[in-house]
Image (cartoon, rainbow, N blue to C red; front, side, top):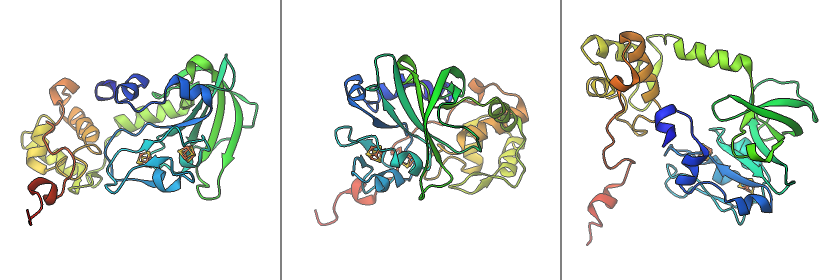
Length: 267
Ligand code: SF4
Ligand code: SF4
């Protein structure tokens, strides 16, 4: 899975996981794709859909499943998704161009019919796109939904509008040294300062930090903090990503109840 190697999800990853709408479905009309592949406790997508096309279920750490036969591409969930992970794709529009709707939370002065630089999931400019629609809903008034017309071959890749300054900011944030009081592992409440202390005690990789601090051992199992821990080790020691490594996944990889583990007490 490319996401593990590069930090950027790919269409191939989503297809491999069976989480991408088929060509046939996209050619029938607009359909949502939830590019949400980590078991985080979150479900506004499910509750926002007026057509009950998204299912997360009782365990809110489940991944959302979009029922593509029920979804009509209304885009309500695009603004509701707290992870900005839902997009609406449409390849029914014409043979040469398609439509991509995505959330956009930066200040902007775009107008309908503007031609803009379209960006892929990594933020790279891949083609031009024409703005067809700009929507602000009352419920999610800070999240604009933009619908772009792009060449049909880019519908699977375009997910935003390219921002020069954005690229610069990403670089700055990645090289920025987090203050010692910044909370890195939210589940176990471990700060950047505690991670640095663990490094001074001899930790040189993700596992070493985890053993000394418990960072990555909480509910999210490192899904939230691992990249930041990796960044702090790189800044402190200059180790390569290969040397820092990943945490070792162990079962159960998601929280399960005692009932699931031990069975019904009455049995
Ligand atoms: S696009 Fe509309 S119908 Fe489809 S899943 Fe989202 S909210 Fe539901
Ligand atoms: S709201 Fe967004 S981030 Fe949360 S589960 Fe649904 S798709 Fe994933």
